[in-house]
Image (cartoon, one colour):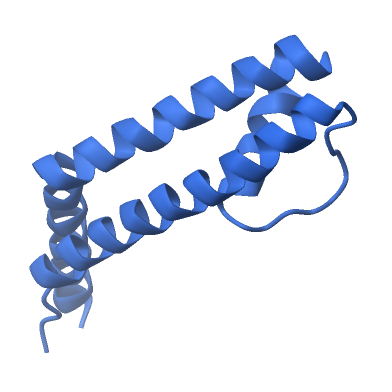
Length: 111
């Protein structure tokens, strides 16, 4: 039983490495990271938020969690957020879907 458990975790690790080294997922991860960088920079410059608050808001918005604890105040910030939300959710979903499909395709559970 312990042996099967270890084999499953080894397979899990291999599948994760495969998903993170695949060209499709790397491209999408780079796009996601770039969008978070751009939006974080925008919120720091326009809204005057700290880097941590701006990055937090960017990731929470992209992942559709949206706690509502911080929100843009300026009109420009609100318009940017509307555009960022549509683009961010699309890129986020594409990234997660691609990584998950590669991951599931490579992961096999031993009995």
